[in-house]
Length: 69
Image 1 (tube, rainbow, N blue to C red):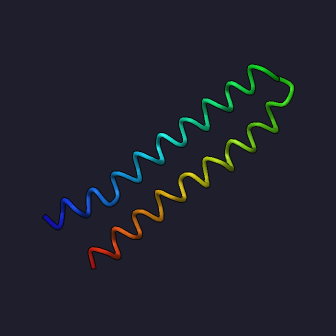
Image 2 (image 1 turned 90 degrees about the horizontal axis):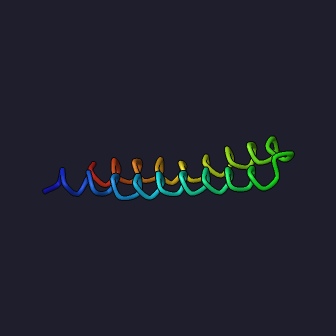
């Protein structure tokens, strides 16, 4: 049961982070389609936003490891 709790503690936030990163990517592509001249600015903002979203997944794995110990 403990292994299941560990797996869910990380799996649920990882799925959320993957969905968030995909939403950021889709929004950036939509914005690039509307304004192609600003693609360099959009690229930097997209990378920053994905880094923030992935930070949540990193926090989730740390919480899962601490909770297991």
